[in-house]
Length: 400
Image 1 (cartoon, rainbow, N blue to C red):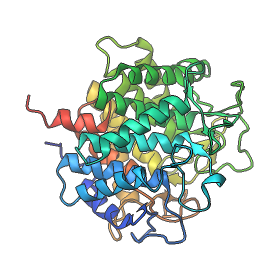
Image 2 (tube, rainbow, N blue to C red):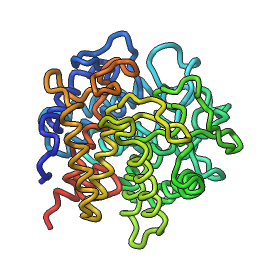
Image 3 (tube, rainbow, N blue to C red):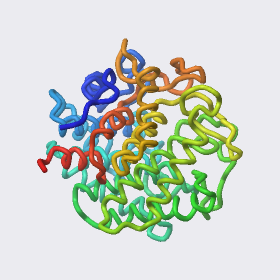
């Protein structure tokens, strides 16, 4: 049984209940601030995959009326989003397939959603997971680089001349989920390679500051998107929430070893401390800024909900592993912040963005697209540390 939810009003039942309204014939749509599908936005692969993941996690929790939603997601990812001619997943159902690139970001969430669905015994999930794993391995994994290719053209002929930390971070998450479901060691080995490539090699050399953008020859691109600093997927500067996310994932990776590489704990701590120092209340108000520049000065002071959610998730894992009062204090402080400012008691879910004064804002996102980050934030404080949330739920429900 899970421990009491520290964010009662925005707990798993409420979040999943809010998410049910996203179901559309082609997958799961973007929800607006009131919980209605935004019909102006086409159905997206990553949202459909993340919602499939959430409903599958809800099925593992035994929440009511969720299995059909998870099965719907599996069916849509297996059908509408799959490119029958060239293979791989289309990022959107708008436009023509030839106009779209095949992104690692999308396939990683397909893998994550399929793995959770397989853990929950959702029909068709094992087949989807196998197809997604094969695509990830044969199309996106670079053994030479120890990383995932950012994207390809539709026919997998031309890779994007860019290496990105964001897609690879979610690749690490996806590989851990695959390892948890299949026990195929190749996925844990690749997860460790990704962590080594971006964190042990590059973030360590920068004293645990993480540059997320690299050219095709791995030249750092510190000015990438300087003219568009608030980009949703590739912002300029250092992204505070990703440091927390990497920290948590490194600890989850560590948990899969009998004797783990010692640098995993060291790196997880370095990233966590960098995020706390440069992210929390650095502009004089509670909350985590989105990004800072290379001098630590906030660039985008708006407060995305996912950054706080990942801070909560990381603090939860650190607290579970160590019992250190400092991490417990962080967990309590940041959970209280989320309860006070992010949980939308009137319309449901969490506000996805706050302005620098902690008021709901819609400058970066138009609504509440999914519940992926928030759901994990309310679950991980009550779960053991494992390679994936699905495995943690299974382990937490096993007697003894």
